[in-house]
Length: 64
Image (cartoon, rainbow, N blue to C red; front, side, top):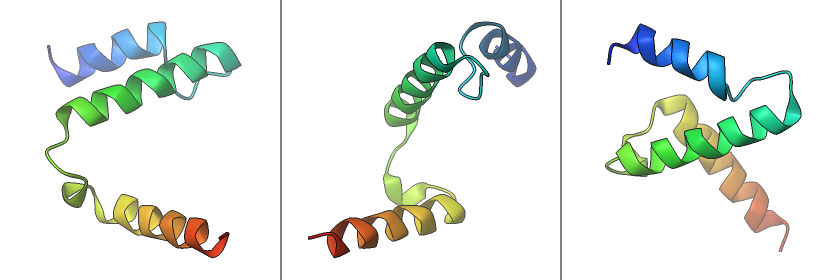
């Protein structure tokens, strides 16, 4: 499947950014599952994601 074809399927079924809350929620769950299944390591994530992950970890720790 080509990326354009995959995007078309996602957009017509469960886009994570859907204006419909239930559809977006399903899309987010499916996207999260896809990321977990295809990611070798969280250390390989894009820099902006790693930085945000670190920020969220720090915020969580500060709540304790």
